[in-house]
Each structure stands twice: as structure tokens, then as C-alpha cells.
Length: 264
Image 1 (cartoon, rainbow, N blue to C red):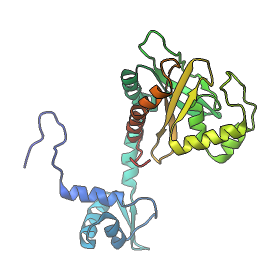
Image 2 (cartoon, rainbow, N blue to C red; image 1 turned 30 degrees about the vertical axis):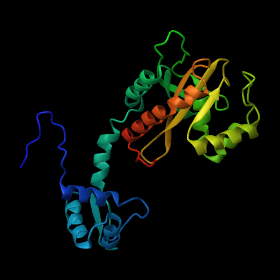
Image 3 (spheres, one colour; image 1 turned 45 degrees about the vertical axis):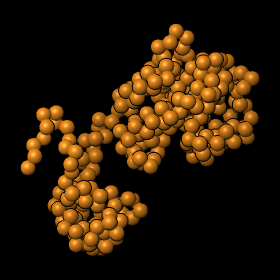
Image 4 (cartoon, helix red, strand yellow; image 1 turned 90 degrees about the vertical axis):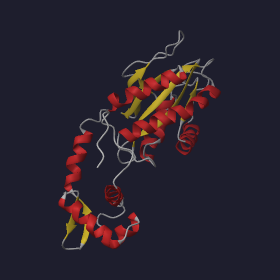
């Protein structure tokens, strides 16, 4: 038996039986509420006899339940109790702060966290650029859905009826590049959904460019957008696309901390 190192970090080697039990739990993928031994064995890549023994332990631990009426298994209430311990500490702003700071360090531009409420994007946190010339962000600032990167990104992730409601409203023109035609905006939103990010190039303010990507929650839903913005002469399209991998990386890390699966 090996002891844990003084750092208290997890050992590099894992227990095969625990790995199999975890794989079995993930076999409950939501496609069906209850699964039988044979189906679980197929999904987990284990033998039925091995699955049967693992299920016995998981049932004893209250993380899996056996339904006498159907002869099948389902996830247990013990997982709900464990999940509540995690969700109680999942504060979006607190978790995002390190990721916003990392983006500012790597890009030297202002990073912001935004949510969708009242058919608009609202800034709930930001880290400013350390440069002398910066684009200003304010907590509670509303990002219009037709002319800001975070607004367009968050609208693009909504249901069709939310699109229709937003596109039916008058759209103010702030610069020569502001989109005010509903059909042009609809096409832009379709492109954003497909590519997974939104750009705004001098659409809300002259000399202001921005890019945004989504943050996913526990069930794969979009819960927020992380944006980067800066002066157009410095943060041009090339610079924005150069920053995109880092932006996506930090958004994916935050999504995982919120419980999203990697494929979200």
C-alpha cells in the first residue's frame, strides 16, 4: 500500500475497480431513465458479471437505485446530495475571475463576463486591460443584441421565439457599421451559431472591436458569454481571431468548472 505524498495531491495511479465504477455511472447518459445490466455492460465496455457486482456496491452507496418492478437500474438520490454540495459553491462570477484575468494577461485587452436577461446581454464582471489606451466596461452595462459581440452571441444561443421577438423591435444605428436590417441580423446570428463565436467591428461605437464565445452550464446550455474588446486600431480582425483560441480555452475551462461535459 502506498501513502499519499506530502502535497496531498492525487496519486498518478488509479484503482481499476473505481475507474470501472465511474465508467458505469457515466453510462447513464440520459438517453433512458433506467437501464438493464446487459445494456449497461455494452455501454461501459464491461462484462455483465462485472457490471452486476459493481451495481451491487453502487446501490449500497445510494448512488444507483434498483427498480424491482422493471428489473432495471437508475441513478440514485445519493448523487443529488453530492451534487448539491458542488452546486452550492458554483458562483459564476467567482469562478470566472481567474479566467478573465488569464485572458487579459495573454491578450492585454479587456475581458468581460456577460449573461442574457431581459433580451439583452448584461455585464456582471470584467477585468480591464493594463494598457494606457483601453475600452471602458461598467458592471451592469447592457449589451444590445444587434450591435455587440456578447449581445449577438447570447441571442444566437436562444430559442427561435426569442430571435423573433428581438428582431421585431426597432434597431438603432450607432455607427455606419451597425446592423439594423432584421434579415441581415438573422443571417449573422445563424453564422454565429455555426461558428461558435461572435464579432462586432465598430458596430456599437466607432473604434471599438469585440469578440465573444459561450460558456456552458451543467446541461450543456449557454449560461454566459466571455468577451474581449479593445480599440479597433489595435484589436483588429486579425488580432481578434488570434485571441480566439485563448478565449475558447478559458471559456471551456469555466464551463467544465460549472459541470459541463467536454463535448458541450
